[in-house]
Length: 447
Image: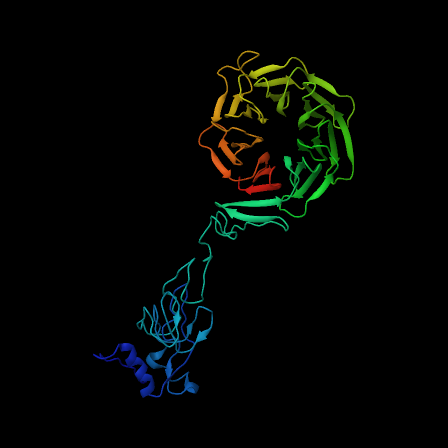
């Protein structure tokens, strides 16, 4: 057989000798043969044997088989677009140079077979085969296709919109609402009241077109939801409507009705005009007064045995059994306490100064031993408050949505510049709130 020999040259690289040999013997490159693998690997050295006549490819191989380069060489090469360039020389990481010289070439071992060596790059731009992996994942802070982590898509169903902000997906569920205020969430939808336009509305968790559940309401504010109905308060009434908006019921009345809570049997609310905390069955009927003599309610919450509320005028946090009785003062001297929430072990509330926490039990019947624990300082104008198993969440008059661990510590601003943030709610993955001034209903994931 013919042997292809390389001789040293003082005037040209060895590659030129190889190219000259092709012309001297009338040989032509045959595409095929070895191939490279990997992001920036070679195309297998000499992709085909050098033959005197392409038709005699089976019998005129030089050196008993194709020359297989470990990181480049001459032969069929593949461009980054995926096209085959016969006779090109592949670079070993950074693209293919058709008809040129590889950046890391050289003739590797002789013999047949496929070159499985070369340089493999995952997640970058390969010299062979174009882009490998998720090479577009460069900015997880603002890229909607890689929000927070590579491949995590931040999106919403139109007309809702989404924007990746600081690695979290901020969704505008609804816009242009008439001063949205209270907000609640269940497994499928977000519900809110529009104080100025007098409507109660909902939208799917993923966004979409909002649905009006009730209209012509006089200043609807607080809202709650269970598996069957949505409940809300207006200036003078407590009402409910089915989740699809097909039927509504008047449950109770009062003067300056504020705050609402629901359990499996009853609905609870406060009446500022009469200074009472009240209860009525889910189906309506006779209203029962649980406590009286409070002057200006900030909010109410409940657990399995008690109703809790804040009194703006007296600066107190109060409790009364669900069956009624003598109220207990849990904390006093609070500066404009407003939003309130409760879990299995503690009670949480916001003031113009702080976000507070107190154990449910202990101490005298009027004030718990040790006083409240201040979770966060200087939160003037705190509005709604909510919590889950790890954190407390609230909105404040600086139009910021914030969270802090249940045990206190450093707080985290989840969203800034929210134009009059008001009510707040959480579920297993996200936090939701209303913006009173610009009329937006918002969602942030992860919370």
